[in-house]
Image (cartoon, rainbow over all chains, first blue to last red; front, side, top):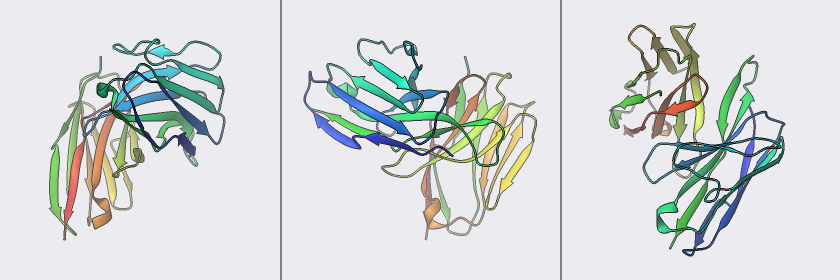
Length: 118
Length: 109
């Protein structure tokens, strides 16, 4: 299975500032995703990070607010721009990877970045 | 689009007993059904998954069943242990994964 790391693991930020979250995978993967998980809630897909092209955003999420980069097959960043307290959430990187002994791709998640906006 | 309903939202069972979490999905084309366990402060971890060409899958104390006709699938944990306490998410997928709202499982000593 893919090993995913995220930086930072947590941060406390002031309203109006921006934070960039990094996601690093230990192997090349075709698909990378960014999710948001609000406190006590389920996971909501923000966007699919496409290597070499613009990310594909889900309904309700826009590039100006959540710019995403994916310069190669193992790394992606998500920026949360002009933050407000409503952006306080856990942000999770996810990848499609091949399970051990499996023939099809499975989705794995990073440890998450816990963001608090004051 | 796909909609996944998960029940119950909270479940408490005595240590050693079995726990069952149930999910339904709306899109009959969905063909992949993973289950994730999320412990406090951690990301979701895949614990078991099932594809639509299989009706049941088991991995030690964990099993998942799928009824394609009724569009529902269930997670069964037997001989529960304290470390099973966590939030469990079911999901259904065709081209993207849609998650249920989660079940908070408490294992009582």
